[in-house]
Length: 91
Image (cartoon, rainbow, N blue to C red; front, side, top):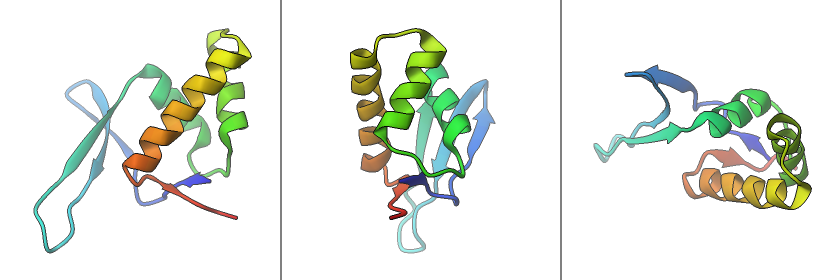
C-alpha cells in the first residue's frame, strides 16, 4: 500500500493536518489531525510502498515498544488511513 500522493500534511495553528477537499458536488471538507506518532509515520512512509510490518518496525524502533504493541498500533493507524480514503493499493 501507499499514501495517496494528492494528500499532503500541512501545519495549521500549530497542528499537523491532512485536508481532504470535498468533490465539486459537495462542499464537505475533512480535516484529519495527526498526532506525533502519526506524523512520524506519514513522513517516514510518504511516497513509498509499505505494509503493516514496515509500519510496526518503524514504531518499535522509534518508540522502543515491543513487537506485539507495535503491530497492534500499526494496524490501527492503517485502518484509520484506510477509513479516511488516504491509502492506495500498489500491487
